[in-house]
Length: 292
Image (tube, rainbow, N blue to C red; front, side, top):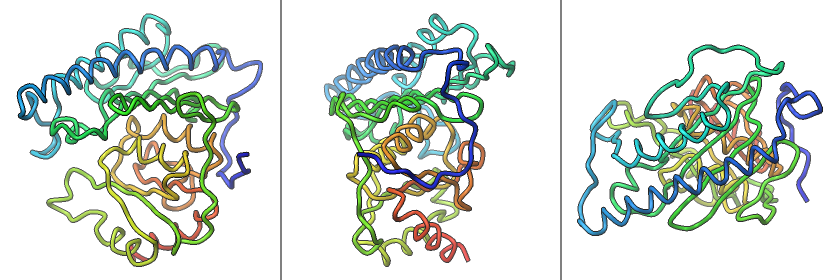
């Protein structure tokens, strides 16, 4: 059974005036994520057939690629969301914002944050740790999330107040009580070759935990925390589309998610810490010390 967690105060989004049936919306988001996953599986097969890198272009740096399948997956997701929820704002990694105006609809602001392929570097190299991430943010709060890893056929899902699942089975965060027994996970920004960003923090956690891992997909890292496979996660310079869906999943699994200061600015600041709750303050303390 999930535990109460010490989350920062944030506006409630569930209730009779929500304007949406979140469970019905979640069902639609799950179907869309599986459809996008089919596109990514086709891409994986094409890469395997060619035994080389998929057709790549690059965004900010030579280690920040985008493939044709990122674009195809996003086009599919956006098309489906626009068909089902034409008044909602959509923010996608590859196409930016699909509807600029931000205003309340039915008394609420609805914004989809989508990453059509989280873990592009892994995907392009034929490594199986990548996913589709679809999150609905209501009034600034992650309220619904779907993360689908197509090669593993693992689908994580949650909606506010209804718990979190993996392939339909409820999941919960771990009960590891101390950092020295904890397995934690992180990621590195795409400019790490220039600035060594996150290396001091990585070393600090390597010294204070049982072990540290790095897989290359922020959305899946968070889902592993939600499922109790990882006990904590931190990252910096992360984008809202990478984490919005999985924040909802971790919280519904009983975990705690904040920024580095213990606040709720993750989507804007790009600084995020997630844990089973028991380890949260110790993780914040390690980060504070590592950052001087």
